[in-house]
Length: 415
Image (cartoon, rainbow, N blue to C red; front, side, top):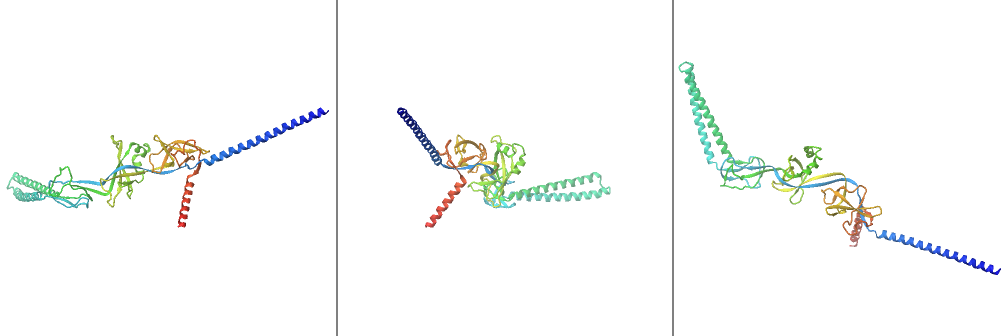
Protein backbone atom coordinates (compact mmCIF):
# COMPACT_ATOMS: atom_id res chain seq x y z
CA UNK A 1 0.00 0.00 0.00
CA UNK A 2 2.76 2.40 0.93
CA UNK A 3 4.59 1.51 -2.22
CA UNK A 4 1.53 2.29 -4.29
CA UNK A 5 1.12 5.66 -2.59
CA UNK A 6 4.79 6.40 -3.09
CA UNK A 7 4.51 5.61 -6.76
CA UNK A 8 1.47 7.81 -7.09
CA UNK A 9 3.31 10.72 -5.52
CA UNK A 10 6.30 10.27 -7.80
CA UNK A 11 4.03 10.02 -10.80
CA UNK A 12 2.21 13.21 -9.82
CA UNK A 13 5.53 15.02 -9.33
CA UNK A 14 6.68 13.92 -12.81
CA UNK A 15 3.52 15.11 -14.45
CA UNK A 16 3.63 18.37 -12.55
CA UNK A 17 7.26 18.90 -13.57
CA UNK A 18 6.51 18.26 -17.18
CA UNK A 19 3.58 20.67 -17.05
CA UNK A 20 5.74 23.33 -15.42
CA UNK A 21 8.48 22.84 -18.02
CA UNK A 22 5.94 23.07 -20.83
CA UNK A 23 4.47 26.23 -19.37
CA UNK A 24 7.89 27.78 -19.00
CA UNK A 25 8.73 26.85 -22.59
CA UNK A 26 5.54 28.38 -23.91
CA UNK A 27 6.19 31.49 -21.85
CA UNK A 28 9.74 31.80 -23.12
CA UNK A 29 8.64 31.19 -26.71
CA UNK A 30 5.93 33.78 -26.39
CA UNK A 31 8.38 36.33 -25.00
CA UNK A 32 10.88 35.58 -27.77
CA UNK A 33 8.22 35.98 -30.51
CA UNK A 34 7.06 39.27 -29.04
CA UNK A 35 10.65 40.54 -28.90
CA UNK A 36 11.31 39.58 -32.51
CA UNK A 37 8.09 41.29 -33.70
CA UNK A 38 8.98 44.46 -31.85
CA UNK A 39 12.50 44.39 -33.30
CA UNK A 40 11.23 43.99 -36.87
CA UNK A 41 8.78 46.83 -36.38
CA UNK A 42 11.50 49.02 -34.96
CA UNK A 43 13.79 48.20 -37.86
CA UNK A 44 11.00 49.01 -40.31
CA UNK A 45 10.37 52.32 -38.58
CA UNK A 46 14.09 53.06 -38.55
CA UNK A 47 14.29 52.24 -42.27
CA UNK A 48 11.36 54.53 -42.95
CA UNK A 49 13.00 57.25 -40.91
CA UNK A 50 16.27 56.80 -42.81
CA UNK A 51 14.56 57.10 -46.27
CA UNK A 52 15.46 60.60 -47.50
CA UNK A 53 12.77 63.11 -48.27
CA UNK A 54 12.95 63.97 -51.96
CA UNK A 55 10.87 66.47 -53.93
CA UNK A 56 8.69 64.89 -56.61
CA UNK A 57 5.91 65.85 -59.00
CA UNK A 58 3.05 63.97 -60.62
CA UNK A 59 3.15 64.54 -64.38
CA UNK A 60 0.01 65.66 -66.17
CA UNK A 61 -0.83 66.81 -69.67
CA UNK A 62 -0.83 70.53 -70.41
CA UNK A 63 -0.08 73.06 -73.14
CA UNK A 64 3.46 74.29 -73.72
CA UNK A 65 5.00 77.14 -75.67
CA UNK A 66 8.57 76.81 -76.86
CA UNK A 67 10.51 78.49 -79.62
CA UNK A 68 12.97 77.88 -82.42
CA UNK A 69 15.72 80.32 -83.31
CA UNK A 70 17.21 80.74 -86.77
CA UNK A 71 20.20 82.91 -87.78
CA UNK A 72 19.00 85.77 -89.95
CA UNK A 73 20.39 88.53 -92.14
CA UNK A 74 18.59 91.85 -92.31
CA UNK A 75 17.97 93.77 -95.50
CA UNK A 76 16.00 96.93 -96.15
CA UNK A 77 12.69 96.62 -97.95
CA UNK A 78 14.47 98.08 -100.96
CA UNK A 79 18.25 98.28 -101.39
CA UNK A 80 18.83 100.30 -104.55
CA UNK A 81 22.32 100.56 -106.01
CA UNK A 82 22.76 104.10 -107.33
CA UNK A 83 24.56 104.21 -110.68
CA UNK A 84 24.87 107.14 -113.08
CA UNK A 85 23.14 106.84 -116.45
CA UNK A 86 25.82 108.94 -118.15
CA UNK A 87 29.59 109.12 -117.76
CA UNK A 88 31.28 112.10 -116.20
CA UNK A 89 33.46 113.36 -113.39
CA UNK A 90 31.76 113.91 -110.04
CA UNK A 91 31.66 117.64 -109.33
CA UNK A 92 29.62 117.55 -106.09
CA UNK A 93 28.49 115.06 -103.42
CA UNK A 94 25.40 116.44 -101.71
CA UNK A 95 24.84 113.76 -99.02
CA UNK A 96 26.85 111.84 -96.48
CA UNK A 97 26.92 108.20 -95.45
CA UNK A 98 24.11 107.21 -93.11
CA UNK A 99 22.03 110.26 -94.01
CA UNK A 100 18.27 109.85 -94.39
CA UNK A 101 17.05 111.16 -97.74
CA UNK A 102 13.71 111.66 -99.46
CA UNK A 103 12.69 110.54 -102.92
CA UNK A 104 13.97 112.99 -105.54
CA UNK A 105 16.65 114.52 -103.29
CA UNK A 106 19.93 115.32 -105.09
CA UNK A 107 22.76 112.93 -104.24
CA UNK A 108 25.53 113.68 -106.78
CA UNK A 109 26.25 116.13 -109.58
CA UNK A 110 28.38 115.16 -112.58
CA UNK A 111 30.24 117.47 -114.92
CA UNK A 112 27.55 119.14 -117.07
CA UNK A 113 29.65 121.10 -119.61
CA UNK A 114 29.59 118.62 -122.48
CA UNK A 115 25.94 117.74 -121.89
CA UNK A 116 24.91 121.39 -121.79
CA UNK A 117 26.76 121.92 -125.07
CA UNK A 118 24.97 118.94 -126.57
CA UNK A 119 21.64 120.49 -125.58
CA UNK A 120 22.56 123.78 -127.24
CA UNK A 121 23.66 122.03 -130.43
CA UNK A 122 20.45 120.03 -130.50
CA UNK A 123 18.42 123.17 -129.97
CA UNK A 124 20.22 124.83 -132.90
CA UNK A 125 19.46 121.81 -135.06
CA UNK A 126 15.82 122.06 -134.14
CA UNK A 127 15.75 125.73 -135.08
CA UNK A 128 17.37 124.98 -138.44
CA UNK A 129 14.97 122.14 -139.11
CA UNK A 130 12.03 124.36 -138.21
CA UNK A 131 13.21 126.98 -140.74
CA UNK A 132 13.47 124.30 -143.42
CA UNK A 133 9.93 123.19 -142.65
CA UNK A 134 8.64 126.73 -142.91
CA UNK A 135 10.34 127.21 -146.32
CA UNK A 136 9.10 123.86 -147.61
CA UNK A 137 5.55 124.65 -146.46
CA UNK A 138 5.56 128.06 -148.23
CA UNK A 139 6.77 126.40 -151.44
CA UNK A 140 4.17 123.67 -151.18
CA UNK A 141 1.37 126.21 -150.69
CA UNK A 142 2.51 128.21 -153.72
CA UNK A 143 2.77 125.07 -155.85
CA UNK A 144 -0.71 124.01 -154.78
CA UNK A 145 -2.24 127.31 -155.94
CA UNK A 146 -0.41 127.11 -159.26
CA UNK A 147 -1.50 123.51 -159.71
CA UNK A 148 -5.10 124.40 -159.04
CA UNK A 149 -4.86 127.01 -161.85
CA UNK A 150 -3.23 124.42 -164.15
CA UNK A 151 -0.10 126.58 -164.40
CA UNK A 152 2.22 123.74 -163.22
CA UNK A 153 2.10 120.02 -163.67
CA UNK A 154 1.09 117.56 -161.02
CA UNK A 155 4.70 116.40 -160.88
CA UNK A 156 5.93 119.81 -159.69
CA UNK A 157 3.11 120.00 -157.16
CA UNK A 158 3.85 116.52 -155.74
CA UNK A 159 7.55 117.27 -155.58
CA UNK A 160 6.85 120.31 -153.39
CA UNK A 161 4.69 118.20 -151.07
CA UNK A 162 7.43 115.60 -150.75
CA UNK A 163 9.99 118.26 -149.86
CA UNK A 164 7.64 119.47 -147.10
CA UNK A 165 7.33 115.96 -145.68
CA UNK A 166 11.11 115.58 -145.74
CA UNK A 167 11.54 118.85 -143.85
CA UNK A 168 8.96 117.79 -141.25
CA UNK A 169 10.82 114.48 -140.74
CA UNK A 170 14.07 116.38 -140.27
CA UNK A 171 12.38 118.56 -137.66
CA UNK A 172 11.13 115.48 -135.77
CA UNK A 173 14.64 114.03 -135.73
CA UNK A 174 16.10 117.29 -134.45
CA UNK A 175 13.47 117.49 -131.71
CA UNK A 176 14.20 113.89 -130.65
CA UNK A 177 17.91 114.68 -130.47
CA UNK A 178 17.10 117.71 -128.32
CA UNK A 179 15.01 115.56 -125.97
CA UNK A 180 17.88 113.08 -125.66
CA UNK A 181 20.38 115.84 -125.00
CA UNK A 182 18.17 117.39 -122.32
CA UNK A 183 17.64 113.95 -120.74
CA UNK A 184 21.38 113.30 -120.66
CA UNK A 185 21.88 116.69 -119.06
CA UNK A 186 19.32 115.84 -116.38
CA UNK A 187 21.16 112.57 -115.71
CA UNK A 188 24.15 114.57 -114.52
CA UNK A 189 22.10 115.32 -111.41
CA UNK A 190 21.75 111.96 -109.61
CA UNK A 191 18.72 111.87 -107.30
CA UNK A 192 17.33 109.39 -104.75
CA UNK A 193 14.81 106.99 -106.34
CA UNK A 194 13.05 106.45 -103.01
CA UNK A 195 13.09 107.41 -99.36
CA UNK A 196 15.85 105.69 -97.45
CA UNK A 197 19.27 105.80 -95.87
CA UNK A 198 22.49 106.47 -97.76
CA UNK A 199 25.04 103.68 -97.68
CA UNK A 200 28.78 103.94 -98.20
CA UNK A 201 30.10 106.45 -100.74
CA UNK A 202 33.31 105.04 -102.23
CA UNK A 203 33.81 107.80 -104.85
CA UNK A 204 34.07 111.52 -104.11
CA UNK A 205 34.54 114.73 -106.10
CA UNK A 206 36.87 114.33 -109.06
CA UNK A 207 36.23 110.61 -109.49
CA UNK A 208 34.98 109.37 -112.82
CA UNK A 209 31.48 107.88 -112.67
CA UNK A 210 30.20 105.58 -115.38
CA UNK A 211 27.15 103.35 -115.91
CA UNK A 212 29.50 100.44 -116.56
CA UNK A 213 31.38 100.81 -113.25
CA UNK A 214 31.27 97.70 -111.09
CA UNK A 215 30.95 99.74 -107.92
CA UNK A 216 27.84 101.92 -107.49
CA UNK A 217 28.02 105.52 -106.35
CA UNK A 218 26.14 104.48 -103.20
CA UNK A 219 23.15 102.43 -102.05
CA UNK A 220 19.83 103.79 -100.84
CA UNK A 221 18.13 101.46 -98.36
CA UNK A 222 14.46 101.91 -97.60
CA UNK A 223 14.47 100.84 -93.94
CA UNK A 224 10.87 101.74 -93.12
CA UNK A 225 10.34 97.99 -93.25
CA UNK A 226 13.12 95.43 -92.90
CA UNK A 227 13.27 91.89 -94.21
CA UNK A 228 14.90 89.20 -92.08
CA UNK A 229 16.07 86.30 -94.25
CA UNK A 230 16.56 82.87 -92.64
CA UNK A 231 16.40 79.22 -93.70
CA UNK A 232 14.07 76.32 -92.92
CA UNK A 233 15.11 72.71 -93.39
CA UNK A 234 13.04 70.21 -95.31
CA UNK A 235 11.96 68.71 -91.98
CA UNK A 236 10.79 72.13 -90.77
CA UNK A 237 8.72 72.57 -93.94
CA UNK A 238 7.09 69.17 -93.47
CA UNK A 239 6.20 70.09 -89.89
CA UNK A 240 4.75 73.41 -91.06
CA UNK A 241 2.50 71.71 -93.62
CA UNK A 242 1.58 68.77 -91.36
CA UNK A 243 3.47 66.41 -93.66
CA UNK A 244 1.86 67.94 -96.74
CA UNK A 245 -1.76 67.80 -95.58
CA UNK A 246 -2.10 71.57 -96.09
CA UNK A 247 -0.59 74.03 -98.53
CA UNK A 248 2.48 76.10 -97.77
CA UNK A 249 0.48 79.33 -98.20
CA UNK A 250 -2.02 78.15 -95.61
CA UNK A 251 0.82 77.20 -93.26
CA UNK A 252 2.39 80.67 -93.63
CA UNK A 253 -0.91 82.39 -92.87
CA UNK A 254 -1.36 80.21 -89.79
CA UNK A 255 2.10 80.95 -88.43
CA UNK A 256 2.17 83.12 -85.29
CA UNK A 257 4.05 86.41 -85.13
CA UNK A 258 7.82 86.01 -84.88
CA UNK A 259 10.37 87.99 -82.91
CA UNK A 260 13.86 89.21 -83.70
CA UNK A 261 16.82 88.76 -81.38
CA UNK A 262 19.39 91.45 -82.11
CA UNK A 263 23.15 91.00 -82.21
CA UNK A 264 23.48 92.19 -78.58
CA UNK A 265 21.01 89.57 -77.36
CA UNK A 266 18.08 91.92 -76.81
CA UNK A 267 14.66 91.35 -78.35
CA UNK A 268 13.45 93.86 -80.93
CA UNK A 269 10.40 95.66 -79.64
CA UNK A 270 8.10 95.01 -82.61
CA UNK A 271 6.90 91.58 -83.80
CA UNK A 272 7.18 90.50 -87.41
CA UNK A 273 5.33 88.26 -89.82
CA UNK A 274 6.63 85.52 -92.07
CA UNK A 275 5.96 86.89 -95.54
CA UNK A 276 7.22 84.28 -97.97
CA UNK A 277 8.85 80.86 -98.10
CA UNK A 278 10.82 79.84 -101.16
CA UNK A 279 9.23 76.98 -103.02
CA UNK A 280 12.64 75.59 -103.98
CA UNK A 281 14.98 73.82 -101.58
CA UNK A 282 18.64 74.61 -102.08
CA UNK A 283 20.35 71.35 -103.03
CA UNK A 284 23.64 72.37 -101.43
CA UNK A 285 22.15 73.40 -98.05
CA UNK A 286 18.97 71.33 -97.97
CA UNK A 287 17.02 74.39 -96.83
CA UNK A 288 14.52 76.89 -98.20
CA UNK A 289 14.86 80.66 -97.85
CA UNK A 290 12.26 82.36 -95.66
CA UNK A 291 11.54 86.08 -95.38
CA UNK A 292 10.02 87.74 -92.31
CA UNK A 293 8.93 91.39 -92.40
CA UNK A 294 9.43 93.79 -89.48
CA UNK A 295 8.23 97.39 -89.22
CA UNK A 296 11.10 99.78 -88.55
CA UNK A 297 9.62 103.23 -87.90
CA UNK A 298 12.57 104.41 -85.82
CA UNK A 299 15.14 103.25 -88.36
CA UNK A 300 17.05 101.31 -85.71
CA UNK A 301 17.32 98.20 -87.89
CA UNK A 302 19.82 98.63 -90.68
CA UNK A 303 20.37 96.71 -93.86
CA UNK A 304 23.27 94.29 -93.55
CA UNK A 305 22.79 93.66 -89.82
CA UNK A 306 22.41 90.17 -88.38
CA UNK A 307 20.20 88.62 -85.73
CA UNK A 308 18.05 85.59 -84.97
CA UNK A 309 14.43 85.07 -85.88
CA UNK A 310 12.47 83.48 -83.02
CA UNK A 311 9.57 81.30 -84.18
CA UNK A 312 7.08 80.17 -81.47
CA UNK A 313 6.34 76.44 -81.29
CA UNK A 314 3.05 75.70 -79.50
CA UNK A 315 2.40 72.16 -78.25
CA UNK A 316 -1.03 71.10 -76.95
CA UNK A 317 -1.93 68.27 -74.57
CA UNK A 318 1.66 67.29 -73.81
CA UNK A 319 3.65 66.36 -70.70
CA UNK A 320 6.09 69.02 -69.53
CA UNK A 321 8.79 68.28 -66.94
CA UNK A 322 11.62 70.36 -65.44
CA UNK A 323 15.01 69.86 -67.03
CA UNK A 324 16.51 69.30 -63.57
CA UNK A 325 14.41 66.11 -63.34
CA UNK A 326 16.46 64.49 -66.12
CA UNK A 327 19.92 63.10 -66.56
CA UNK A 328 21.67 62.00 -69.72
CA UNK A 329 23.63 58.92 -70.75
CA UNK A 330 25.11 58.65 -74.23
CA UNK A 331 22.76 61.27 -75.62
CA UNK A 332 19.65 59.63 -74.14
CA UNK A 333 17.61 61.34 -71.43
CA UNK A 334 16.29 59.55 -68.34
CA UNK A 335 14.09 60.29 -65.33
CA UNK A 336 13.48 58.48 -62.04
CA UNK A 337 9.93 57.33 -61.43
CA UNK A 338 8.71 56.64 -57.89
CA UNK A 339 6.94 53.35 -57.13
CA UNK A 340 4.12 52.87 -54.61
CA UNK A 341 6.64 51.76 -51.97
CA UNK A 342 8.94 54.71 -52.74
CA UNK A 343 11.43 52.72 -54.80
CA UNK A 344 13.11 54.60 -57.64
CA UNK A 345 13.27 53.24 -61.19
CA UNK A 346 15.10 54.92 -64.08
CA UNK A 347 13.12 55.42 -67.27
CA UNK A 348 14.21 56.59 -70.72
CA UNK A 349 12.26 59.43 -72.33
CA UNK A 350 12.19 61.28 -75.65
CA UNK A 351 11.83 65.06 -75.58
CA UNK A 352 11.17 67.84 -78.06
CA UNK A 353 14.48 69.36 -79.22
CA UNK A 354 13.13 72.90 -78.73
CA UNK A 355 12.99 74.09 -75.14
CA UNK A 356 12.99 77.26 -73.07
CA UNK A 357 16.05 76.31 -71.03
CA UNK A 358 13.95 75.35 -68.00
CA UNK A 359 11.70 72.48 -69.08
CA UNK A 360 11.27 69.71 -71.64
CA UNK A 361 8.22 68.64 -73.62
CA UNK A 362 8.09 64.83 -73.35
CA UNK A 363 7.27 63.03 -76.58
CA UNK A 364 7.32 59.49 -75.16
CA UNK A 365 8.37 57.49 -72.09
CA UNK A 366 6.01 58.98 -69.48
CA UNK A 367 2.29 58.70 -68.88
CA UNK A 368 0.00 61.08 -66.98
CA UNK A 369 -0.19 60.22 -63.27
CA UNK A 370 3.38 58.94 -62.97
CA UNK A 371 5.48 60.42 -60.18
CA UNK A 372 9.04 61.53 -60.93
CA UNK A 373 11.94 62.90 -58.88
CA UNK A 374 12.81 66.57 -59.42
CA UNK A 375 15.53 66.96 -56.79
CA UNK A 376 19.04 65.55 -56.58
CA UNK A 377 18.90 63.80 -59.93
CA UNK A 378 22.41 62.95 -61.03
CA UNK A 379 23.78 62.57 -57.50
CA UNK A 380 24.77 59.28 -55.87
CA UNK A 381 21.85 59.53 -53.45
CA UNK A 382 19.31 59.16 -56.26
CA UNK A 383 19.67 55.90 -58.17
CA UNK A 384 17.83 52.76 -59.19
CA UNK A 385 16.42 50.73 -56.29
CA UNK A 386 16.79 53.44 -53.64
CA UNK A 387 13.73 54.04 -51.46
CA UNK A 388 12.71 57.61 -50.77
CA UNK A 389 10.01 59.49 -48.95
CA UNK A 390 8.27 61.48 -51.68
CA UNK A 391 7.47 65.10 -50.90
CA UNK A 392 5.37 67.32 -53.13
CA UNK A 393 7.80 69.76 -54.79
CA UNK A 394 5.39 72.70 -54.75
CA UNK A 395 4.57 72.29 -51.05
CA UNK A 396 8.22 71.90 -50.20
CA UNK A 397 9.14 75.04 -52.12
CA UNK A 398 6.37 76.95 -50.38
CA UNK A 399 7.59 75.74 -46.98
CA UNK A 400 11.16 76.75 -47.75
CA UNK A 401 9.97 80.18 -48.88
CA UNK A 402 7.94 80.56 -45.71
CA UNK A 403 10.88 79.59 -43.52
CA UNK A 404 13.07 82.08 -45.37
CA UNK A 405 10.49 84.81 -44.80
CA UNK A 406 10.22 84.02 -41.13
CA UNK A 407 14.00 84.07 -40.76
CA UNK A 408 14.19 87.40 -42.53
CA UNK A 409 11.48 88.79 -40.24
CA UNK A 410 13.33 87.59 -37.14
CA UNK A 411 16.57 89.16 -38.33
CA UNK A 412 14.76 92.42 -39.03
CA UNK A 413 13.15 92.35 -35.57
CA UNK A 414 16.52 91.64 -33.95
CA UNK A 415 18.01 94.74 -35.59
